[in-house]
Image (cartoon, rainbow, N blue to C red; front, side, top):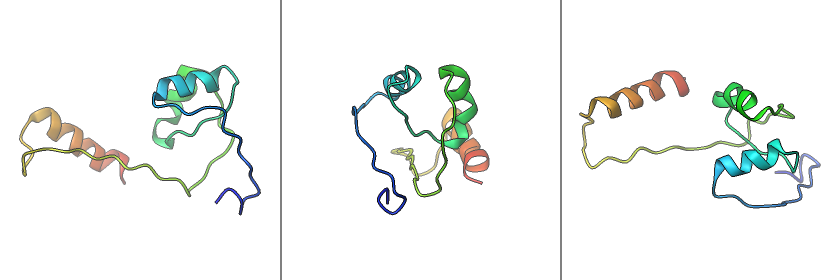
Length: 88
């Protein structure tokens, strides 16, 4: 995909920790991708700017439960909020 856009990224690090990744970006050592849904929070917290957008990259989140029907009030609230606010 990056070739078709004329972009040649140079990887300077791989991070398993999202906060560490953002700290490197904040320090000016590179750029990072983040979901648009938390863009305002990331811009405020890390004092970074948006340099571009793409619709080509997607993230998937999974909630795994041993129960077939969610019953715990907190889990139900998170699931409902995600369904109605994040995935519209």
